[in-house]
Amino acid sequence: QLVESGGDLVQPGGSLRLSCAASGFTFSDHYMDWVRQAPGKGLEWVGRIRNKANSYTTEYAASVRGRFTISRDDSRNSLFLQMNSLRTEDTAVYYCARASSYSGGWDFDFWGQGTLVTASS
Amino acid sequence: DIQMTQSPSSLSASVGDRVTITCRASQGINTYLAWFQQKPGKAPKSLIYAASSLQSVVPSRFSGSGSGTDFTLTISNLQPEDFATYYCQQYKTYPLTFGGGTKLEIK
Image (cartoon, rainbow over all chains, first blue to last red):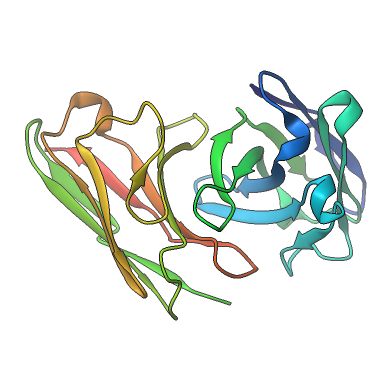
């Protein structure tokens, strides 16, 4: 199970930290991602954090690089998304997603229910 | 960035029909292609990975094929619960990218 929290209404330029609590699987084995969906729009990948075996390295979409930071705490089975300098275009439902490697690549195989972030004055 | 183009963007079909959705990548992605189903107000659900492998508990009426740049998702014997929006996604190269979605509606 993946349960996101932390979504809220925030003013443009503000900050917010999202959390994703994982249970029912070995969290530390997996890569973890954030994916967002603006109202009425499609899915947009936000970023990824790899597992300990891959040094917890991160990747980001260009639209959030330098403003958003992904981290994880394997001891607490938790994933985080620190969002700074929020813009109105960051308004979206944010999903955490688990990635597994069955075929050489890391594909999403399980998603949380999402948390809504609204950046508006 | 790799662009993922889905067609059609919307599709009407009846229960029991067979439908096919296509996804084209702007450059070759081998078989690093996944499909997702999303119902209104719900999180996406993973259906297929590696272009043709079904995720666990996904019904066998769903199938995927393709490699390189051209891929298809086929749903046979459509059921009422299959009416949803479907997305393809490549995971060969960063940034990971999704297609624009195909909305499957009841005729």
